[in-house]
Image (cartoon, rainbow, N blue to C red; front, top):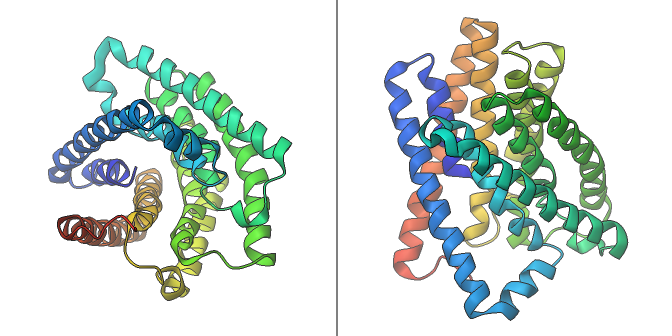
Length: 300
């Protein structure tokens, strides 16, 4: 998700600086190839270690990442659509159905099983909220705006409901374990993605709702920067990739505002967020490669 979102940030920047656009396409294609590799590995896991895969699906925290499988490819679909041709809509339909079924199954478990407060994390936003927004964005890119508005409304409703639960848990119950703290960055994702999709469905206009969503996303980003030391107490590992999607979509959202308002301050601000997103994701990518080479990436 983080690499695909960064690719879309480069493509968005390419509307102002055309030389950057090809790099965005390359990043999106690389992210799609990585998705195929990871999805195939997950299928192998179900075939070779079904008990482990089933335990992940039933786990109250890890199940949210299972919902991220169709959501992550839906994130890439708007950028991949020109390359997919006639296969774009059938793939969209399949992914949208998977997204609805998986998310509905998890949501049904939440409201029927009374999860413990310790298992309530911002990871809930991945499939239930961001996933629906990604469906809406893909529908808009493929020219099905009525369908896009339906999923946009669902994503907004899920965001309001889930965020109320998550923020209440973070404010009133025990502190998240260090390994789970990077997931708090997912608080930025819903307003930023909602803004991107809202402008896409609305024809490119940045009205009061769009600017309000952008303001809330920026406020959350500032709050997380203030507590960055606390967020990063855990040793470096896979959880740190939770920072990449919020950084990428916040950059895309800033470019959307800059393009819609066509003002110089907005363009410079979008450029600053773009540089920051590239620095953060690049740092995490380099650390990941180094940790993989040393066999220290996945916690024992």
